[in-house]
Amino acid sequence: MILTYHEIIKSVKNGDIHVTPFEENMVNPNSYDYRIDYKLLEIEDLPVDPKKQTSYHEIDFTDDGYVLSPNKTYLANTYEEIGSDIFVPLLIGKTSLGRLGLFLQITADLGNLGAKHKWTLELKAVQPLKIYPMMRVGQVSFWKTEGSADMRYNGKYSKFSIAKSSEIYKEFSNN
Image (spheres, rainbow, N blue to C red):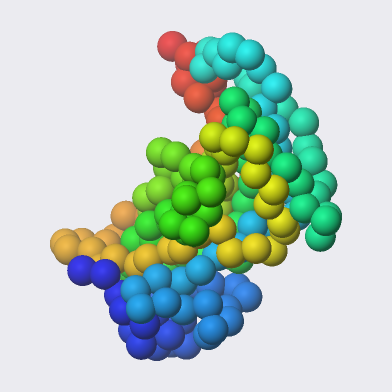
């Protein structure tokens, strides 16, 4: 079951949902808008090999914006720290930007119980598209769980509040 406007506000105020900073005007009928922070990582490798550590370069983009190029993958993070111990966050892109050709959260939209941090966002533009720091790029919804919620996420990305490149290559080195 998805939380609605009043339940999101109530859950933030009573501490069941963590959104920092929280702005009530960013609450929607069944989600909360999130913004993009001031850094991007652009993946440099072509082709990308999941058995090797990915090379990327950092882009500090300013209020003048930054043009995303097609055929490139970018990582960024949310400006807000988002999470919950009892609700599962689901992060998706804004339809307004999708209609301009921005794919956001391409595959990793489902959060985990207990993870509270700035989320890494995957961005892919199908045509040159200018984005700006602090713009609303997506929305997060919160879902009630069924069954025991005693297991918390403590995975390899749980300790980061910056855009973090893939660490899948480590899975190959452990075999």
